[in-house]
Image 1: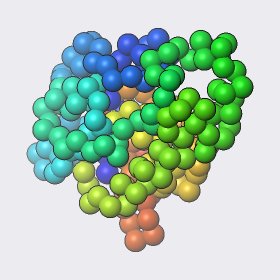
Image 2 (image 1 turned 90 degrees about the vertical axis):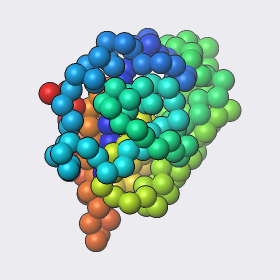
Image 3 (image 1 turned 45 degrees about the horizontal axis):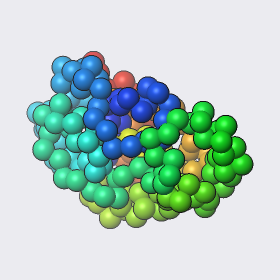
Length: 187
């Protein structure tokens, strides 16, 4: 299963909590000019799943894919922090932010906890057929890595995954294995 992190957005560049917004035009242009990042049947993946956000859908379209939208691939709901700068939250709600970063079950913003995201993605990953492509944002990729490696959300937050990078998980009898992480998708 190949995960493609969606193209960058204004919120990513401005270090803000995610909101459903379009991808940066330059990032979409790079995606459209890229060669497919896998050797599957003439360069076309068997199935493409996409997170239910504009930037993920635009990224899949830039690659020329017709994806299936899956609500399970959405980022964790940041509640009242949606679209707000991380630095602002650190100033105005330092204790809440510290709790959210340290406790996977906490959701001080009124949205979804990191553990909730991890459980949702793990359930989806175990139910879907391997060998597909997923276009989503960083939290979902980290949750999938956590499921494959037996790590929790606090540990997986340490994975740095660039926009338009790929992460591949391979299913085997013993569960999921990690083939690569954060590989540059644009060649």
